Length: 105
Image (tube, rainbow, N blue to C red; front, side, top):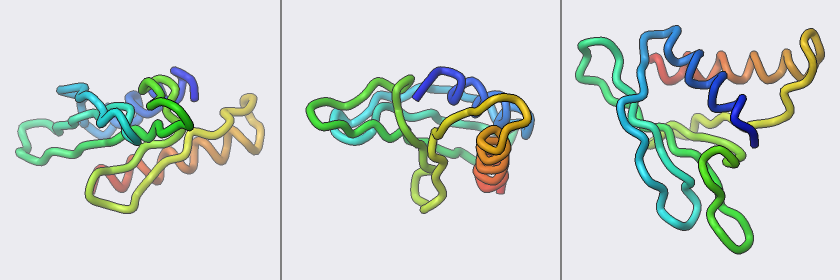
């Protein structure tokens, strides 16, 4: 639930040739917002929805607690980042890499 999650996610996606071409609004219920991704000259489009359902409101995208590739069960929880070299950092990096690899295929 911090901007670094979004920054890490965007940087990882860009390493695989994806670029965010549009930031779409949420649904005022459970989705904070979405990213529309394109890759190179391909016609492939991937939408990532950021989950932000809260008790009384929908959280803004920078406070989302997870994201999901639309139309799939592939999700990424925005847990603790941890310090460099920590187990928490290792878990975040592994989960991020797995999620991005799923988006890439």
